[in-house]
Length: 384
Image 1 (cartoon, rainbow, N blue to C red):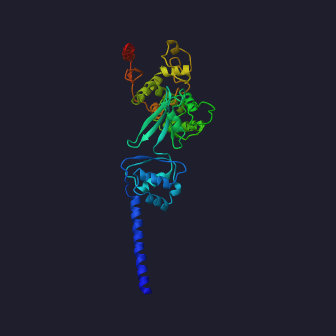
Image 2: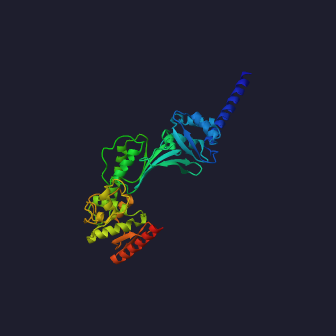
Image 3: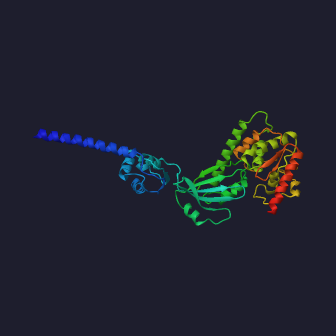
């Protein structure tokens, strides 16, 4: 009898073990299998939340088939305690394993709200944007100029949320004064700015920041990146260029940046100035005259007067020979590269052509014809 009972018990244990193994294997396959989600969702994980709350939210939104398997899988892989707060873009078909990895890996949120501070040549704009999971594109919810406008309600609301992301986008051609004034107006930053960085030493780019970051630290990042770019471009310069130093390259690049907003023209504009320098001609470029008037503090907002074109300032390339003493803006990488590797042309003149670009010329006669065309375009525009 005891032998029969023992035999039956052993059989039961073996069957139970096989069933347990089967259940575990099935659970593992479910944990790693493609998920049921058909449309992307943005999952928000609040600070202090736990894997149980998250698993139920995922099940309610149709991202996982079984919240229990999700929690057990997270426990089994020792990731339950690594849950991060933030907003996470869960893509269609994501497995439970992939979702757990995404929620515990850390780093910046992948969806939700971001506030972008765009520092431009003529204005600064704060944009509140939200990622639409269905299209994987950001939708603008509010925009205002933080230097002059009161913050809208949408901005105030998103500024109070812990998972809101922040970014500063610096346009090519902004001056250092403009950058500092914009940073002062960004309430997500802290600290004072001791002095305005030297013109040309800030790299136009997009910078991820965190709320509470020091303004001086952001400026230091911009300076570090620009230094790296200047050194890299100067080291890779071709032989025989007419620029004598990285400083001259930076000055010329800033003029190129202010002269054209058409990327394809940078090499041609650079060739005009290089050709003029080689021939001993004055650069005669309006942006340098404007900088001599404003010192980079704001926008002139009107056309230049003849008296200003003849005015004596260190930057007025109508009256000085060669390059001005300092950059007139913060140039981007493409303008730095154009300064040391201009197009090979005979151009020594250019003027606006009415399309946003320029008409280039090798002779004064040709240039005068281009100028006449531009004057005609200006007259037609003023009459319309």
